[in-house]
Length: 158
Length: 158
DNA sequence: CTTGGTGCAAACATTTTGCAGCACA
DNA sequence: TGTGCTGCAAAATGTTTGCACCAAG
Image (cartoon, rainbow over all chains, first blue to last red; front, side, top):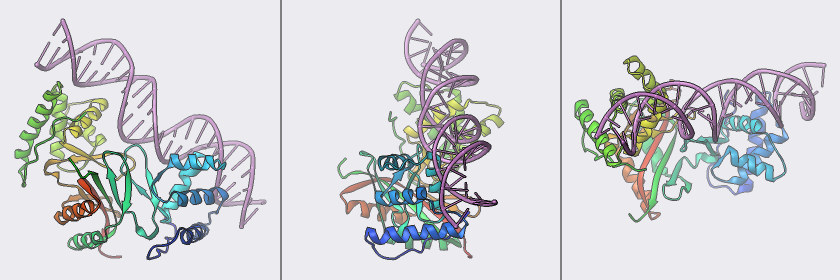
């Protein structure tokens, strides 16, 4: 299944600018597939947007529970798949134990700085990387559709 | 646990140049920890070297079985951990379902071209990436210890 | 001999799925 | 009034671990 993809908006956006369009995008993508925009799905997306960074399924479940809107594990996982297939979030793999996800708005956050001392993870963007990536692919007659870069770092010393 | 790390050898090496040193490295690393270099461990490393690319635990088990040297799943997983902690192999995460591994000799193969049409995965090296990576980290007072890049590609058309 | 290794099977953790009842269009 | 959605619990998957016996140094 490949739901209708998000219309990426260039440039930085305030959080409020993001929330509304993402709901709309999700709604539209669901409708296009004959699926329903349920309260559970809306709450899950809301909670994800509030995270504003990386999150795991478990965190999402906890956050929903704290809000008093208990949603079942199954529904969370099913919704994560929907959100991924319409391009609103993307899966980030850097930990064998569980999947992490992040908002995919503007295609930012394809690069992670993972601090191997503290475990802290920061997302960032390296614009030059796109050019480099495309050059390498073009040289092989391939087309880059996306990328994920993880950089493992530690404090400057040592 | 952090076993004695491999002494990376610069430049390309023929396969035979690799096999012997890797056994020696493994042996030395094990001895340094009071661990034993068993036939099972030797066979596992041999089989990994023969793969000469990405592999999964399951493939390793199959290959060993075909050779007539059946090794248990538990031993394979335990040995993979040992090999990783002494830097001979590294875990590559790009698939939620299972871990992939690769030889870490010369630190090559940190970049993967993943064909989203065929599922084919190719490892390659982008020398410029190191400079880019280090620049970004230095700007934040961090030191890059390694990286993993996955580029998702499809055939040139479309 | 002593310590560590192996295989097996059970345990684990995360994610997926079957199913019965519920709810929106 | 039907199709899809939810929650629950069971299943599935890859990986880890406890244990009894075996083997290398």
